[in-house]
Length: 635
Image: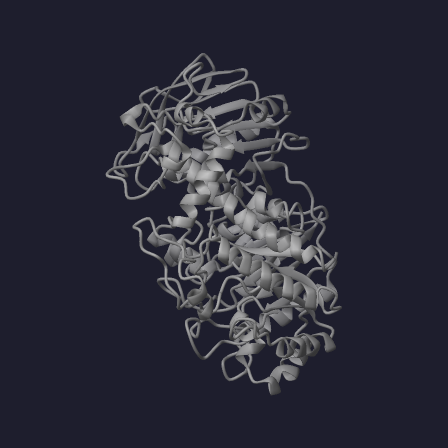
């Protein structure tokens, strides 16, 4: 499959007289895919039932006349103002009980039946009109589910739907729910499902089992909302359907939503993400201010390759300064090209730049595009054209299974956020730090869903922080030929957020380890490891007869191993993680490579990519890599 480029276009923002010129310039720049329509509801239906398709017909035809392929988005992320008047209670409600308002986007509650039906209606009308259009070669449902904290809603509609969801989960047996949640504690027992409220506005923390159940329900509501659109589109079109996920948005299960889609896409903003969600230190933010974190984008590339079952794109690639982060620097020259090639090295089918032309109005007027507001080429245009030329001249990227895998579990993320036990502790951050350690060691990595049971071909598998480990997964990992790293908190809770007591966690087959006690540590209270590194943030006191492979300077076990299984009972710093992975990798026969600061590799079936994310040239084993340098080495 030949890799391709694209962009996001908003014909409704521009005079129709320039559409043809825009389309010709897109074609000349080497672009293939043009996403349109996802925010266009008020132009399509300015008043209820008054449908205006003619402009969208002409826009699609104008793009198609140049041989461009359209990704058509359903417009449900931005319901028009009249929709709020028709359904005044459609807005999501915050944990503090305040409804979200009109005036930006994503202003709806997934549980509102009236808006659910409206979203089906506009999707059906769009699919009926464009499902057979030869220029519409792919679809996108909605836009960025979960962005702006919009999955979890404490509305009346959510409460009604949550009660029905719980009744189904517990087969209508309220006593079963009371027992599973431990509601005897603090006299929280319910007599019927109709008595159950939402886990907000409580005097102190709500029952964690209640919170986790509400998080699972909220995720299912997103999946159901998306599935309704997918079913409608598939009734009228054979083109593949996608959704554009966001970086570090974990409020719904992307694997479950992705089961209904052909392609997973995500929106990659390396500089904005470095400032507002990577968790980097001030020193790291300064060092990578114009390049982005060396690993954050790669982690998401690997995650969405798994969500898409091998088929994935970058639907929005940052081309210049954004408008929404605390600080918004311009990319280092060459970084737009590097980000694009990095996505292709991880298996992306397409990379689409956001956006074609910078808007001179409204909320995103400070967000750069491939064109300036005056339609002159912006710096990123030249880098995109360079990539287009390189794609035409180079052999295609051939993906291959990685030797190392990390299990990623959205349910574990909800469990950690429900009960972090210490300030700043999060499942996603734990995963990111393990991923970073593997990348520092020169590894190519796959991300796997928690439902995986076949681990054939992997030499090492990491399952840190999976607070609930189902028995079939434990058994599959124990049977595998891979070296497996668990912990911290792996297997710490059952499916309803209670601590297993017979046996105590982690209860891993063939590995005699018991977590006897846990503590969270102040940032100024790290516990030194013998031989280098430290435990920080979170520590478990371990008991058992397994071999000690890491211990504190005072001789307390931190990691225990039996056979191919290792349990680590602490949140390790970078040096500690590097030591743990090196120890396990050696036993697994996995060759590690210590990477220079800011340099990363990605191995495919036929070559190895080298990327320099630093702002300085770096000498490597394959020669000097300039800042933002990319090198392909054939195997």
